Image (cartoon, rainbow, N blue to C red; front, side):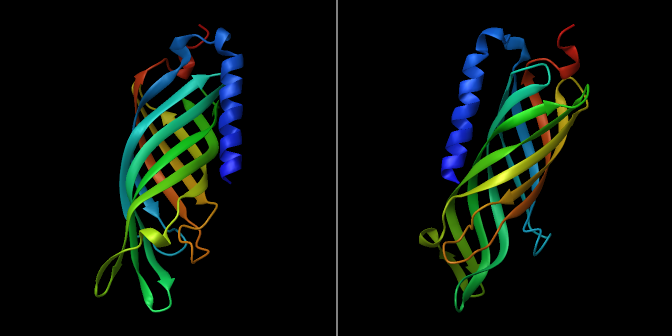
Length: 198
């Protein structure tokens, strides 16, 4: 999966470089993102996390951009079994890097999909008798993401994102991760999609 992520990154960078001379800076977009995340859809909807970060998209054609994002969150994955006799609520800090194509599908709508790489830190297992650091039991993981957003004003967009984990969080289990996030995008620069090519 890491090879696939690196390959997609290299491909996006190459395409961006090849068409850079045809791209005006005003067609690039960047800003901040705030999100509310519901984790562990296969097990429990009660675990909610919040996160935030920054995004940047670079226009390739009239309706196609390369989208990238970096954000952090505090994640909760519900009850997990680390080993026989040891289970509890798995929580951790998370840093995620997103990259993939974004398509304009209307005057104010965008659709993006691609790969994300998750980096975990400060993982803890909350058991009935206390909290256990499980850094040695965890590993970083990759996911696919599918994102839809709607621009409600010149500076604000609302979006919904679905993530599906490709490899397990814990080295000793084959647990997959699903996540749905509701996002608020705050645009710092660039033009709205309906403003281009006037």
